[in-house]
Image 1 (cartoon, rainbow, N blue to C red):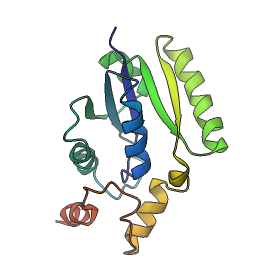
Image 2: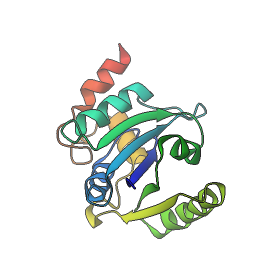
Image 3: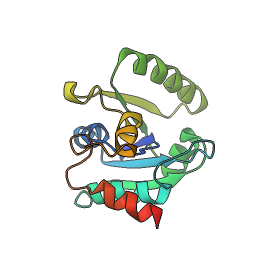
Length: 161
């Protein structure tokens, strides 16, 4: 059976922490689907289409990573795609408590799914999308927080036009 993981998130913006989790999960899974969730109540910096383009650009040379947009429950997406696992990155103990509860509910809703947690690398622990978004909004240098091959300001400029 093919091991397919879904890596759900909003990825606004996609950070080096996200990139690291995906790269480190590749040896574990046959395929990974990055699922960009749609939440109409949130104010995003980047449109869902731009976030998809950014992640696709980061992994343009990795055919086992696919990026999709989904509006609904992660477990329903897993059923539809044949995913066997949900992949989550953990930075802190608080992340673990939050993610554990979600994983247990997901398991109750869809018994065929397993959640796999990867710890972030120590240097990525303080990085999260909210902080990076705030630095970006205030014209700070975010180059150390986002994947090297991404010109995030170009994407931001494109969003405004």
